[in-house]
Length: 398
Figure (cartoon, helix red, strand yellow):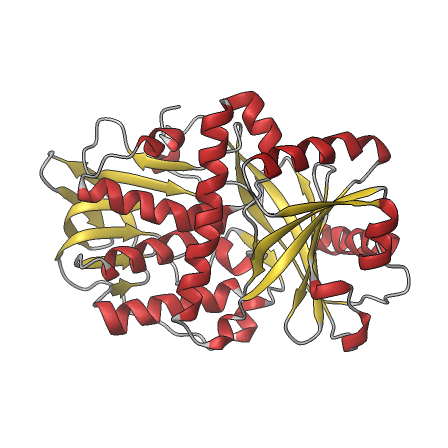
């Protein structure tokens, strides 16, 4: 398991199970992994008309996706201004524009799904953790506005008057959103199965894959799957398949979901909140008048103990009360999970070197759901043989 503690999201939906594969199979596209990346990619491929199979060695949405925060933002953990400095203006813009489109794709998908996915358009407020971070927020505001991304800069007085946050400056981005990630995955998979013929097999693990340039033969638990294309979307699992990915690192993140509050205790517009410090604190509204608070990442790949989770949760509550001292917050569920990051701030999306028709979608980073959304569309282009210069931005061998 990639998480520990008491998870909130799985309690919000019944446990739907799929069978294990009990025969050899053939398909156009095989998706390996039943989390956020796998589900969006499987839906995208199946809707495009490909005979698609999705497998997971455990259960759908049962690993890191069950601990997903459900914050959806076009702004990356790596600010646009930093991306411009590191990648150049054109590549930085393309990265952020794809993230913006990824947000829109998620929004589009949610219009086809039941309301219990709990998608809501939200603003995000990035506040200065320290006064000296004001210059960073100004630079980011200028960069975002230059390329037309919707945002506004707030003075400390404006920030406090609107959101009650006692900090020196805030950057508000529009067109973001919140979601119940667990239900979203389940509903997306259900629709792909019922409407587009997706086949799903749980308790079915990819053991090996081999490409001869024409097709890919996959050894899975007790059987074989032959596919024209294979997409590995295994999330934060650390195994032989991701061993060659160099610019990655695994950390641990912690979160809690509160007991219900009264409806008048929330800040303006129930905006999503995060800060300029690294690692950063993040806060969002959850259906049922709850609050999710997370952060306090540490550079450790081990799954955290329940004792450490309780300790981190107490600290998360203290950090929350520094912002909102008048809101009494009590934790209902506390958990910690492994989380993947990349050293350059971009996800890995593309064909595996020297393995034709084998691809990876690794949405590492704090914006993984959005990366998965635009990554699924990029992979569809690759499988169709369509050329797009954006493909090079996320190649595996960088």
